[in-house]
View 1 (cartoon, helix red, strand yellow):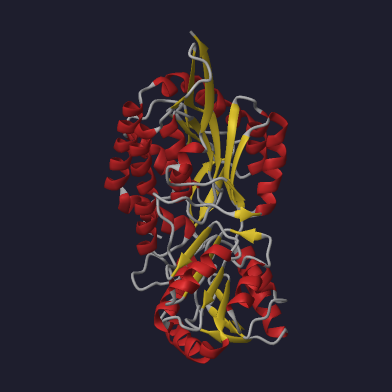
View 2: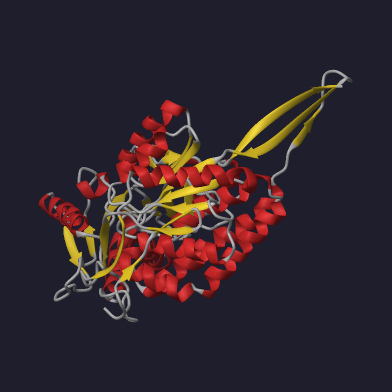
Length: 478
């Protein structure tokens, strides 16, 4: 690794704050330590809420144009520091540098979008039943928001939550994942450089998530929790948030089906699978987890998929030729290996692509599991790795039934050249996001979120603002 080891403080009330203890941040590609950050706890969590609560009144009273202007400045600073931020993502998370640059652009698009949406929060007038009354509806910020974010998109999962919160007039406290805190601190540094007022945005780093989140969940001044992560943790947060009746937004696990109809363009479908499945080494909540291909086109699909798989290169994300970086840690490697072994033991054929031999970090070879069946772990559990199980179906009704046979409902994909099938699938799949001939549907101006146990609420689009606003009804007797 080139460059000195970083030592960063938390960002609270516009200042860099250190704690008695710290923890190291390691590069999953080389296993080298790249930095140290404070190991915050209950005290720092409370101080952050103090700062956000104190800043809320002034921030919420700023005009929409004033908040918009500050978000625009934050957007500009991030744009100017894209390469620095992208490199940090690759160092602490592992994804190829090209993907990391794409993430910064995507993350920044939410700041740009919600800077504009800040000026479009409208109220209502309602026709009254009496000539002496006036009925009004106002939208007001909920208050202090606690954002708990994951490691797989350490920039985008912050801005997708924080940008609408700030645009609405809320203040925020952020707990980034312990694997990727440096990206969060750099984003806060950019906000500080942009002139964001002290206390409006605060970042608490910790290696003990419960110590920090429990303080925020119990503090009645925190009015909302927004979280991206596992369904298991999301349920715990929801349960604890009920004690103070906080608003909750949850973006949880996925088990995305990728359906390739009999009439699909096979090359387009293969390209779509490659984009969806192997982006970020398969460590995305919306990546293809179960691939269903019509039985009549299985062989040409598998042949084309093998060829595409062989073109991938596994390696350090800082190397220009790398297509697939490392997984985040050893536990991730073991989970993927367990799914592969289970599938092979139940009759699947493993087709391996790029080799990961001789690499020191948490690398694993991308694998196609041909002949996957619905009783295999890889078809029942979210993988979060470069494993592509392929199963066949005989008709569209079967594909819908099997795709929907899960407690998850985040994203689904369908490739077909039939307009009739496109509507049939998109209307009958029980998922919050459906990509029809589109493996990368996420964008700032569209709502992102799941059904069933994949979450509550939506991020992005004008709907994303509503998550951070209270509706106040005013009845006025003249």
